[in-house]
Image 1 (cartoon, rainbow, N blue to C red):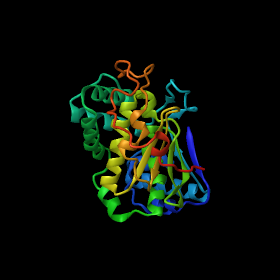
Image 2 (tube, rainbow, N blue to C red):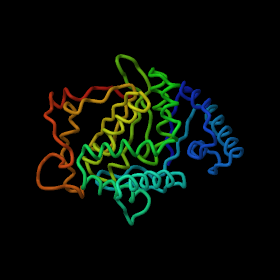
Image 3 (cartoon, rainbow, N blue to C red):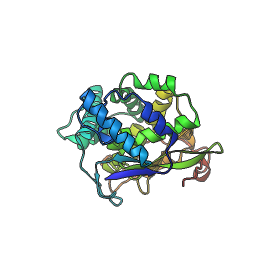
Length: 298
């Protein structure tokens, strides 16, 4: 499956084209170049593929999903590339090494199984801490501090992060598209819309979404890259919006913290309480309607 971002040449494309990717296999493969890490052949494939796409004013981001996202309650089909599997296995192994948890499963199922064991055996607070310790292992050591030093928060930088996120992380969350939003009265193309989150539809767990993805990811991006990002999951269709340049909703005001459990689907469900048993329930300071910071997508 291919996700396309169309329109006039995006300013972030110029930044991306100027980046020294160092023959990094992920970007080479997704730009239509060689899947090997050979410096000369990979760089030629990357340069040629990127130039062709810029001339067409279309950025093609490949995704392993087969067909369209499956209906709610059903798992979408994926055919992961060698790069996808490398990233999935790297993250699963990092989590296993950090926690001591093991699994007999493979690929994305292994990542979900280790995550489920972690959610079942540790507190929400500790889950978030572990993810914050593991996430740096999924990136080159130089990336966070270098990007933070080079790219100070601005409209262009927020759009740049929204532009590059699909290139780097579709193997984890599934197909995405970049949309416009209004942040502090400014129109910018800084929303990454995840059509149906692969992690959520495989885990079917509100607590895993919140404690192993949303909350630690928001904190990691802010701490390591110096960029605000608000992740707003839609638990009715399992989509999610990542809004770069917008601060996350405080947990005590976030309606997602009181999201009902997927009782018919979630293997971590316990008892008959309405709220997810794996998400601590703060007392909401405002009503759900007022707590959700509004944003307009187009």
